[in-house]
Length: 139
Image (cartoon, rainbow, N blue to C red; front, side, top):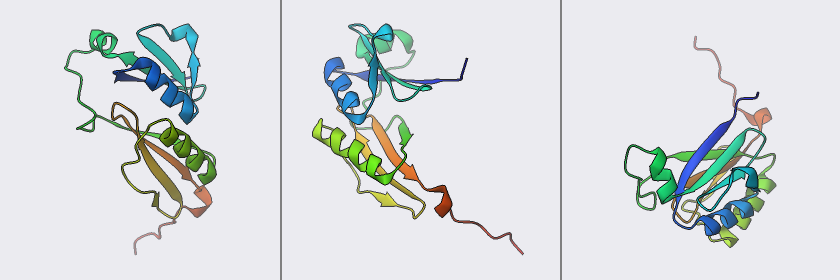
C-alpha cells in the first residue's frame, strides 16, 4: 500500500466547507464521509478530512485552535502550472475563500495563499525545477 497523508481539519459548517474544497478541485469520497465528516481527495495519496468540531474533538486531547485568529498549520499543494494555480485560486475566491497576501514570485516558484471559512491556510504553488537556482560550492 502506498503511503498516504490525511490532514484532519475542524470546520464549523461541513457542507459549506465541502463546497469550498470542491471548488478548489478536491473530490468527495463518500465511502469515508457521513454527517460528521467529509473525506476530500486531492490525489491518490493526499486527503483532507473535514470534521465537525464535535467529531474533531473526539480525536483530540487539546482544545481546538481558533484558526480564524491564529495559524495552526500551513498546508501546501503543488500544481502543474501557474495557470492551474490561478484557476484554483479564482475558484476558491469565488467560493468564499480569502487571499490574505499577494502572489509571491521566487523566480523558480510562484505561490498564492488562500484561507477557507475557518481560517485554514493553504499555499497553492507551481515550481519550475528548470529555473531552480544553482549554488556554487564555497571556495
